[in-house]
Amino acid sequence: MKGVLLSMGPSDLQLIDISHTIPANDIMAASWTVREAIRTFPVDTVHLVVVDPGVGTDRDAVIVRWNQQWFVGPDNGLFSLMTEHEGVEAWRLDQPSFWLEDVSTTFHGRDVFAPVAAHLAHGVNPEAMGKPDHALLTWRWVEPVLDPDGIRGWVAHIDRFGNLISNIPGAWMVDRPRGSFKIYVGNTIIDALHSTFGSVEAGDEVAYIGSSGMLEVAINQGHAGELLGVPKGSQLTVVFQHA
Image (tube, rainbow, N blue to C red; front, side, top):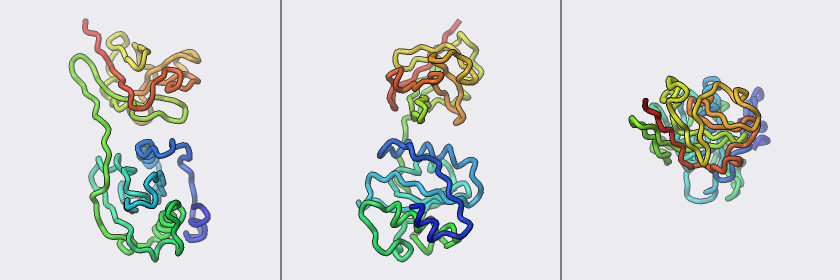
């Protein structure tokens, strides 16, 4: 894929690897990673996103425009966390003249997506490469529930350090003092928020508001997912302690 980009892209093209650690076939982990990364990239960056368990099937290939940036990849739910926002545009790739001549059925990242990304980097209009169609395939996580007794949420993502990233907005937690709640995840109970991992001893559990703005649970210098026995999709509950 990099060879195609360097061969077909502009001479000043810069290649940056965001991640090669997405679990195999985990579309929503990729969606999360892309959404969290793009906020720091400049206008008109082209993101090539290939987590594609349906490669070679009838799933569509798309260009997506959102937040003044470009995205190229399969329409398999990868861009689900963008479609929560206004202003998402998409084009379904239907012009093989912009792909490599010999397209493998198992490596569209190299043969379809990378060439299209290179053409975008050259400034080619997406309508030359595909038909406008903004109805992308979208997956949804279950939303967290807040009531007077607490919050019921889920572990939406586990990063490569093993930190458990929930779908509970940090804004629901930041003004709650120590002793006013308990966080239950797996068989672990945490009763305070901290500002960073080093606020607890190595090997201890810590809850905090992460860089994504969500409530997270980690083990200082350890893999919380493994050590707490908590896989992605597990329930994470906050119980408010009433006086």
